Amino acid sequence: MNNVYLHFGAHKTGSTLFQKWLKENNDFFHESNVELYVKKDLKEELGEWASWSIEEKELTSRFPQKFNNFLQSVDGKKDVLISYEGFLGGLDLSKSGVIYPNASKICSLFSDGLKESNVKVSFSIRSYDEFIESSYKWLVKHGMGKQFKKYHLGIKKDGFSWAPVVDSIVGNFGEENVFLWDYEDYKQSPQEMHKKIMSFYYGRNINHDFQIPGEEMVNVSFGKIPLRLSRAFNEEINKTPSLNPQDRKKAKRAMRKVLESQFNEGEMGGKPILLNDIEIKEWREKYREDISRLKEKYSQAFYVGV
Image (cartoon, rainbow, N blue to C red; front, side):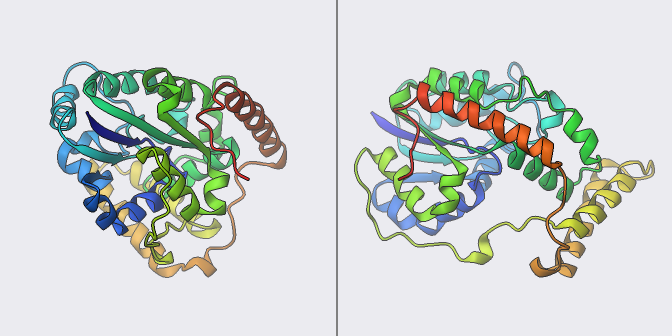
């Protein structure tokens, strides 16, 4: 039976760094006969469906054939490691108000399509306040013109939780085949966590001397000044009737490149103030309660730092 190692993200939990680390160490995977698929590779296989811009996956008519063809090319045939943070859903949290509302259906599609494979899944979660702020900053950087207050109002506090997503993953693949971790543990030592993930996938202790991606490969978020400018530009571009969608996309991309070239990391104007102190406290308390329950419920799957 072949092995399929899945990394489902989540968004904004170090997935880009992890994927660059995978590519940096492709020789290790080549030597162990494991084929890598990361976001860019998947866009070639799955086209537009493998895109952060697709907020609601089509689960019935058009997309399954291409998706199923990809799974059939893997299932029972070869060992692969697939890493893509967009598989479970989009990043705009204000659209549905919750995290990955289609996670259960997507996990079922993977589970049903990989019945002849030994499947292991890794997934990371992040504190709600940081996840909300980080998602908004990414969305503004890539075209959103919505004010943060309106974005935040679209999030349903009662239903906003990692629990349904984690339940879907564990329910479809089994707790023994799932590795979960808190993004805070990843930030402390990415390289150590990479080894932990590989040890979980391979079912043995991996202590290989892996290559480390350079610092220039890590994403840099917009600071206060470029974030404010970007949101204002996006708002104007979005409401300009003479621009078609493709022209809007080009204009936003050009604007983003200008801001990135003019504002280096030291000139970003400091960290944007999005959530207030009371909101941060409430979101963090909710996250602590949720992660405590999840770690108790899935003690076998959750990584616990020393």
